[in-house]
Amino acid sequence: MRLLSLLLLLNTSFLFAQPADYPALLSLQRQGELRDAWLQERAKTILPDLLRREGIDTWVIISREYNEDPVLNTMLPSKWMGARRTTILLIHDPGPDKELETLACARYAVGDVFKQAWDPEAQPDQWARLAELIAERDPQKIAVNRSEHFGLADGISAYHYEKLRSSLPAKYQDRLVSGEKLAVGWLETRLPGEMTVYRQVMAVAHAIIEEAFSNRIITPGVTTTEDVVWFMRERSNKLGLEVWFHPTVDVQRAEGGELYAFSSRPGSTVIQPGDLLHCDFGITYCGLNTDTQHNAYVLRPGETAAPAYLVDAFRQGMQTMDILTDQFENGKTGNQLLAAALAAGKAAGLRPTIYTHPIGYHGHAAGPTIGLWDQQGGVPHTGDYPLYPNTAYSIELNTRVYLDAWKTDIRMMMEEDGFWDGEGFRYIGGRQEELYLVE
Image 1 (cartoon, helix red, strand yellow):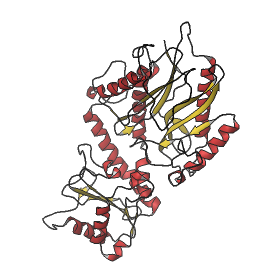
Image 2 (tube, helix red, strand yellow):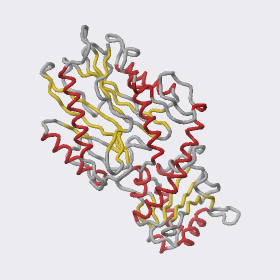
Image 3 (tube, one colour):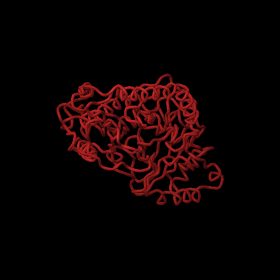
């Protein structure tokens, strides 16, 4: 199988034990080393551009152990499982052509990026020291992670925000602003090195689906959709991978009747010849998430290929994906992309529903929302966020198709992860080009 032949071009002496026909996986140690290297590069390249783009000279990120800000979690070294006591990071831009200061107002340095800037012996009060650090730099805008509409950018607790305000002189209290766009920009922007490994992450996810939708796992008339779901969970676990949501496997068939609602999970069903199978599955590896929906057909006795009407339905689904990604353009908002793609799809005779989202450090990640399944007229606020270069997306949608042979509609549900480099869109690990076949 073509997906199962891809190997990560890194030192194989540190590989995790796994089935021989799967893509190679790095040990936890190598994953940690890789993520630490990425963090150092991100701090030197992404942070300066972000602060200057948004006109912010100081960004303060505050978290307490077991109540971590989503942004702070991505700035911790790999050997830290979370914040320690109260962890305060301060990022300051001293001006053009100067390196950022990345400081930790904490009892420890936070990895190699954030240098320790508080000595409890010299100043016992951590908050007083934070106020000193800010006053020494006299910033005009102090960003904190508060946001009404982006949950991932709303990481500061109510207590910490009030504590910060009360610790600062009045003139600096008036300079506190939302760090929403800094947080979203940090989380959504991908490094070239991250995208190299992302291809490997996608190859692993595709390989698990490819095995799940095969006769190695499915015996028609015996195997249930829940059996396949739990195979995907078990296979991920044995590979040392996490899933970020419980997978779905469902069936559409000629006598299936009404399509199941998106607001509820499909029940367990025995898989039969003639079924159209669909899965929704996502793993986490090297801190990067996947989100994939693929489709398979269970051959009837005597069949060697899927019926032409299902092949055509699959083609219509791929056409909808192409129409959406053709709309990508720097500066367009998620709502503009949605409206343009829906209009173009309907003009082409398709019946699309689009609910595409950013992906990266989180499954439903930071960035522009491009439709929700129940909000096809646009999504307020998160849908108004613009498209930036070097960002990744789960192209998630369905195309409704009427099948004369089944005398009913089906949804051709598809999802593949892709990357926008600012000039063009590509699928990170390729995409499903044809239906998997289960004999």
